[in-house]
Structures are given as C-alpha cells and as structure tokens.
Length: 294
Image 1 (cartoon, rainbow, N blue to C red):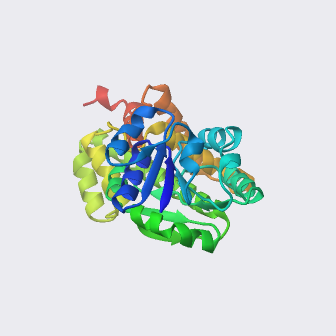
Image 2: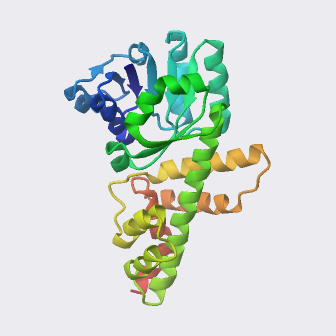
Image 3: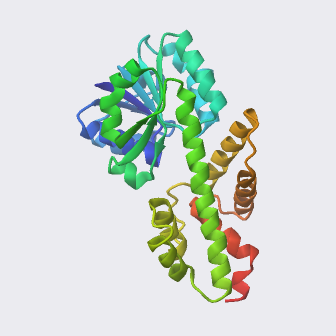
C-alpha cells in the first residue's frame, strides 16, 4: 500500500520501519526533520510538509498528545488537505472527547477514521509485537488491516465508535500505572525492613504477579533502570489525566487515579521528567527517606 506516517518518536519510528519491512511504499513527516533520517536510509520518502505525507491510500499518525493532534490535523488544516476516501489510522493515546470530535470531523470531509492505539514499549514496536486496539467502520479497518498486521502481533476489535479504542487504551494505561505504584510502595516497605527491591520483586513476579506488566516494570524498579525512558513520566501523567477526564465525563469516580496523578506530579516537581514512569519507585523511596536509612 501507499501509506504516510506522521509522528516519528521512539514508537512511531519503530512502527513505520515495520511498514517498510513489509513492503509498503512509505512517506514520512515529522516536525523535527532529524527523526526522518533513519527511515529515509531504509527507503522511505521524506515529505516537506504534513500534507505531502497524506497523499496515499492511508495515513498513520503517532503524535504525543491531544495538543499535537489538534495542531496538525485540525488547526493545521491537514484534514482539509487529505483526499476523500483516505483512511486515517490514529495510534495516539488521546482523550475520549477529542476522539469523538475527530470522528465527526473526518466524516464531514468524507474521510475514513480508525482509532488504533497500541500496548507495548519501543522494543515491542521494533519487533512488531504490539497489541493494537482497533475501532472504526469495518470496511475501513479491513482496508488498513495489512498495515496493522505489519506493526502488531494481535488486533483487538472494539466496535465502530473510534473512542471505544481510546477509552480502553486509557483504562489499560491506568491499570499499568496502578501496578507500578503498587510495586513502588511495596518495595519502599520491604526496603525499610531490610529486604531489597530485587529480592522482593523476584518473589512476587515469579509467583503471585507472574505477568508481563509486573515482570517488565518490576525489573526496571529492581535495577533502578529508569533511563532511557521507554514511557516517560510526562506521558504517564498525561494519560492519568485522560482517565480522570473520561471518568468525570460519565461520573465514574477513580480514586486511585487521583493518587497516581499526585505521585506523578511529585516526580515531575522533583525533576524526574526524563525518567521512565517506573521511576514512581523513586517517589515512594523519597517519601520514606530510605536514602537516610540505608
């Protein structure tokens, strides 16, 4: 397929490279042109502007947040520049409200819209092992299925309303954050009593919590390996905010989300913005003043 890709951060670059590997004709654009160079070396065409990347059968985008998506597609006029019938596949984790707005704006212009946020860190994106949540019109999803299957190991259909995929992604990230915070607080407790985080998490992730989320983030916490960030704290803070907003819209209380928001804000205030969100373990340790005890 002839496809464009916009947004070449760690995730976007890895996903786009798999489209090339699968034989698709790829045109890329990124605000920072330097991010396009590795893909250009693999055979991608580099567009000078976002609208030049949107001339194919489909356009994939992986932008950081609501503001970036709005600036490029709505305020920047990209939707108006796209050909009718083009399928826009949006991989970004965005608010439910913006997802609903985007669906309506695409429909006004005769454009197909598929929400396809992903679960997986950059290493999983590079290995094409992402789990992709998919929502949109069935015909549009089928048109872009070859692209999605080139980037992920499994597609999870969630209906025709695009915002369903987004709320599932938001809720999933909320669950990941609660797992990280629980390990952060639990390891602060065990360390205060002389049991190292590594020893404790080895037990837990081999028995009661032998699941990928706990094992992956538990390893980072045990090794205090928070850089380079696979998923940086500001992104986690953003996603917890999206969960709270989605809950407020439907009057669904999320008490844990409020705790997580404050913990992440505490981390950001301490200068941890460049760290992985598993660095919530540092927040728990600082609260307990563990460095003064050990």
